[in-house]
Length: 339
Image (cartoon, rainbow, N blue to C red; front, top):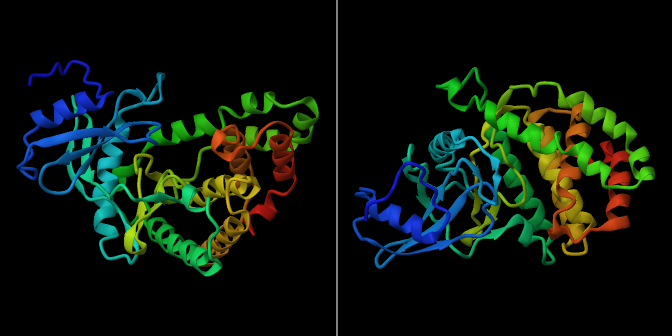
C-alpha cells in the first residue's frame, strides 16, 4: 500500500499498521495482524502491533507536535535521542538484576520517525498504579533500592567517560523540561487565591532565580523519571520506559522529579500513602548515600516547579482548598521532603 510521505503522521492505528506493512523488516517475516493504540502516550503516538505468529511489538511514532495537543510543537530530535538511549541502555543494563529496558529492533528516521521495540507485555503495572493497593514495607523498600541502583548506574556516566559524549547533548530536552515546569509556574500559581500566592512568595523568587540558570551537565540522566516511566512486570522485573528526554544534568534532579509526584501520592486518598512515604524515604536516603550528594537550593526550586505543574492532574484527586494547603505546606517544608 503506497503512502504519502510528505507529512507522515501516524495518528491512528490504521495508519500505523499501513506503514508497518510497507517497511522491509526481516526480523518480522510474518505480516502484522492488528494494531492497537496504547494509553499513556502524552508526547508520542504508541501502538501495539500483533502477528499471527510470534510476540507483539511496540511501534512508537514521533510527530512534530505533542500527541495529546497538536497545537504544541515538539522537536523531532527526541526520536534520535530515544533511539540512541535504548541502544545504550540495552547494552548497559543487559545483566542488571531486575531492571529491564525494551530491546530496540528498528529505528526509521525521516520521513517515518518511528521506533519498533520489544513489547514488555500487557500485564505491566505502572509505579503509579502499583501504589493504588496496600503494599508490604519490605517489598516497597526493595523496589526503591533497586531503582537507586539503576539511577546510580546511569548517573555514573559523564561527558568525560562516554565513548561518544555528544550523543546525548539534548539541548531541546533541556528547553522542553525548563519550559514545561519553570515556564508554567507563574500561570499555575496565578490560579490560587492571594493568600496562597503570598505564602509562596519565597518559592516564586526561588523559581525565578533558577529559571534563568543553566542546569549543570555533570552526568547522564534517564531524562523523565516519574511513576509512569517505571513499570512492574512478571518475575519481579522492573521496566524503565520512555527515554527520549535523556540528556546530561544533575543526577538528583531525577530524584526531585520523582519526589514531586510521590509527595502528591502521599497526600492523595487514591494511593497507599504510608507505603509511598516509605518508598520515597528509602529512595532519597539510599541515593544520597550512594552518590554522596546533598540537597541544595536549586532542588527546592525544581521541586516547587514540578509540584505546581502537575498538581492539577486529575489522577491525584486533589482539588481546591486541599490543593492550596498542600502547596503551601510543601513550600514551608521543602528540605523535609528530601529526608
